[in-house]
Length: 341
Image 1 (cartoon, rainbow, N blue to C red):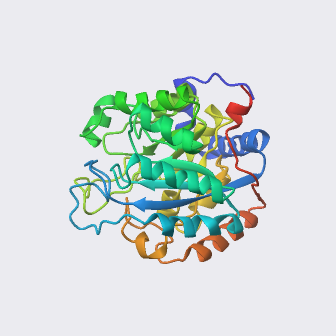
Image 2: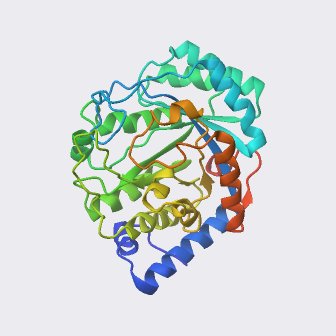
Image 3: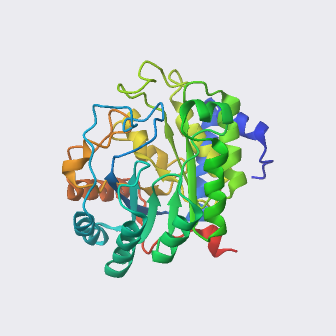
């Protein structure tokens, strides 16, 4: 089906109900199959530090939260974890942290080099805004991808949610990464306080404009230890909006990797990520953080898999993917956008 990929089309999809909604989900899943195949790539996340110097209003590990036990996972523990990941069907490690100098730039580069030398894994990093020279150095060390979400396309709303940063600074990081040849990922929260349907549509349009290699989205979930503790998701009365946004996102970005993020399971326990995979997503990102650290990295409450071991989590993921008749992706699952250039 031919579409005009403009704001009007995005808003129409976000407003779909009844048969139109069923058609939207069917089309998104069909397009995912056509462009990305039935393979689901498994990318294990290691939350290597919850130390953060930013005070983002929604985040459970914000600098101002005194109820968090801070940690940095030693390099040897990270290496012990990544060595097990290929045997669990995981072909990428996602090294995620708060925005801080948990490791020096050089130490982190050396860690990336070790992972690339000692395993077959692709390496994705998600550690916030960094200078161009740092991104370049980490790429030279073997970093394949970098994930840095813009969260909202509205500059005023962005600055309200992120008092330590401007949207223009975040977007500049994405442009720098693309210039350096790093596969770039971004995305947004759905339903942050102050968001309108217009802003949500603009978020989707911005993802298409940025030509991202991977796009992660998920619902805003208020954390009790943040200034937004008493706020509700803007779509609390229409949780289907989370999946509508995902499906429209796929239609606008047919060749981007889109994960079924953990937050979908927090809102729809035990089935949220499965539904996301059936409505446009093609990547699953299990928590591979060593068990003793997991409870201390809760960006939002109700995060699943906190009490599971990495092995238990991995077996559950494989079973869930097979239960919906999808196959396990092999190889690194690099950007098909970059392959086609």
